[in-house]
Structures are given as structure tokens and as C-alpha cells.
Length: 539
Ligand SMILES: [Zn+2]
Image (cartoon, rainbow, N blue to C red):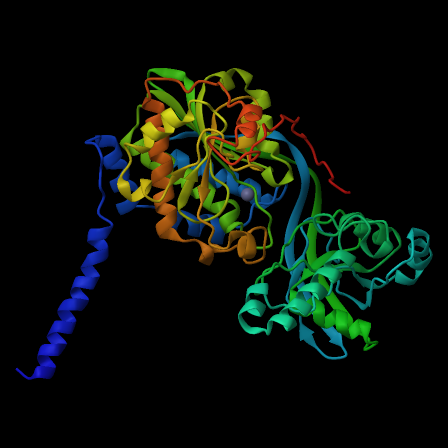
């Protein structure tokens, strides 16, 4: 055998070893002989359905904007899946929200040259009524005061008004840090923040109006003045990602353009090069429409009136398909229910899953649920909520409960090391996630534990953006998360003791320097009434 061949063989042997190694490394390490834990692992890790479910939900059903027909389709899809798995599920109406159907958005630059622009309607935007409209684009001027703005308004009639900050660069900060001379980078930083200041807040360009969550009260005022449309752009500090929120306009369409294309139109207008845009936008404003939570349940056999709640909001913004906000939380809880039904069909306590509507509108669905089920709240053993993207669960919040270490540590001690070595328990006073549906329970003193995911540039790229799509989901981490959620639900259900409702003394903790969590990191969320119909948040 030639030396070359021997080397080749050795190489192949080494390659084969490399192929085998990850399998050995991911082999489960069970701390106990608990058969249910073992079965949950094998179902969740070896025959996971998360990828198929994600493909159906994110690609076919699509985004789940509150009040849209797609959200109702999604509610029905979840009920159908649960029914197939033998899990009782139903849609519960919590109120109404302004209904809207998103059709196509075609936005073209017509003069001084032709280019199809990357952009889409803001949610709830009126369309162009089956026609195309063509109009000049103008820049919102800088006004000395609001009366100057009002005097200017007649000039905006029939125009498309550019109302967002023109970003001086569409390169993310990290790209400038990596490439620019420090002084050049510093100049860009100050230019960028000056421009952002000028075009944000309650008094955009001296108009006395804001662009809150999309086109805001400024969009509405421009509509009253008879503009042809409102052009916005809200880029993230990331290549290609823009936020796509909402408008309260009902006649003049409001669209969001990419950072690059908004900048193009803005520079043309600013330099008197007469940009004209053509809009072909298809949408229907449907009036107030019913909105629903989807609730699934595996009835408890010993303590049916005590509950373990798996929780994740189901609605999304609709610039993408709501993959990581909160498709992944949704799929985590659905898959957890699927494998629980197989491995633990007769739980001691009732296992309930809540797919909440209108979280993005102010925790509407989960607040309504807690208001409507006061009796059930008393029986809740624990809520596990997930709402921060696709990453593996790395943090478990203590929800401010004095006894949370006792229970969470006991539960984690029974989970495979592959999971527990990635997770940190934040201590009793650690924030439980904040700003998500766990707050709707925590405000009533119910133990609500946030399952915090590893970042994967969530805030920078996918959160609320046009880039929040199927391809961003990290399936290996998602299947682990579903298995972890199922294990928590099982262990909390079996726990001989109910988690007590004694809360951490925040004042004492803060003055003592924050034992159990960073001082001042947590305040008790206050319960607020759920708005039961569209609640415009114009500011
Ligand atoms: Zn969310």
C-alpha cells in the first residue's frame, strides 16, 4: 500500500470518528431512572415534529396579525393539530380588534428612472382600491412650530410624504466598527444619532406629531390634509431588516420601504430630482373582528383543579411570518403538548396550554384570560412562558417567588445534563422575562417563570421585522426547547408540593444589595384591564 493510500485511509478513519463524535456527545445523560423523562427525551429529540409544524405554520398559514383572517386560520390550525393528537382544544373569543386583510404591495419608482422598490404596506393600511396611484414624493420639511406645519399642509395634498429619518448609512454599526477608522466611525455615529433625534419622538420635525409604532398621529394628520400616501422606513441596525408596524390611516395608504430604497427616494426628493412613485396596494379594512385565544388541555387525574400552564403568545406582526416572535414559542409549547400527551397522558395536575392573542397590542389575550378565570388562577402551580426567539433556553426566571429555588432546582435536577448545563436559574427575584404574557399572571401573584432563550441576534434582525421568517429558526435548539418545556410541565405537575405564593421582599432585597438577582432588576407587574376592542395607541 502506498504511503499516500495509508494517509488517505487514516484521513477517512479520522473523518468517520468525527462523524460519530457528535452523536456520542449528544447522548442523553439522565440523572435519574425516571421513565417519563426518558420517554419525553426520545420523543422530543429523536422524533421531533417541530420542523414540519414550523413549515405548516410559518410558510402556509403565515403571519398572525390580530384581527386578520390569517390569525383566525392559525387559531383553527392549532385546534386541528391538537385534535389530531387527542388533546382537547378550543378557540375562546376575548374581544374584537380592527380587522384587516393584507393583499399585495407593489411599489415602483417611476421617475427619474424605473426601479421596483423593496417595501410593503404597514399593517392595517388602506390599499389603493383596485387602481394604481402615481404621485410625486416629497420630504416632510423641518417646521419652526406646529402652526407653520399646519400652514404647510395644503402643499402636501396629492403627494406622497416621506416622514422617516433618512439613514446616512444602511451598514450596521458592527460593520463600521470592523472597518472604519475610529474617527470616521465616530463621525458617523454622531451623524446617525442627530438624524434619529430629529425624526423621532413626540414632535417629529416640529409637527407636534409622532410616528408611534408606524405612521402614528402624523400619518393621520397628513391623511386629513389629503396626501396621496405616507412613506416610512424604520430600519434595524442590521443588513436588510426593517420593522413593519402599523398605521391608523383609513384612506391614505402608509408603506414601509427598506433602508436602501427609502434613502434613494429621499435623496432624489431632497435634490429636486422629481421622484415619482407608483403604488398598487391591495387591502381590505374589515371593521372590528373577533379575536381568540387558543386553549388546549390535558385533564389532571388527581388534582384536575390545579394547573400547569404552558404559555406563548400566538399573534405576530406581519412584515415577515412571525417566525421567532413568536412562532418559535408557539411551536415549543405545541410540541411539548404533543409529546406530553404520548409520554404522560394522565397528568396529576391539569396541563393547560395558552396560545394568547394580541400580546403585541398590550397582552390582551392573556390579560383577558386571567380576568375571565379568577377561580383557575388560585389553582395554578406554575406558568412557563417563552417569547424571545428561537435560541436554546439558557435562563429560567424565578418570577419573584420565595420558594422558586426549591422547586425549580428540584425540577432541573431530574432533567438530562444536556439541558441543565445550558440553563441558569436566575434566582427567586430574577426577572421573569418582562413585557410578555407571564406578567398577566405574575400581577395576580401566580408563579410565572420565563424561559429565556439564547439571543441569536433576535433584537437586531428578526424581532418585529420583515426578516422574521422560517429560515431563521434554529431547529436543533427548538426541539430541545420543546422537550425542556414538556419536562418542566411534567415535573411541576408531579411535584408533591404546590409552589407557595410568598413573594420576595423587593425593598429589602434592593437595600441588601440584591441577593438572588441584580438589585432593582425587578418590580411587580401591575394588573391592567385587557382592552376588549381596538385600542388605538396614538401618542
Ligand atoms: Zn413576542
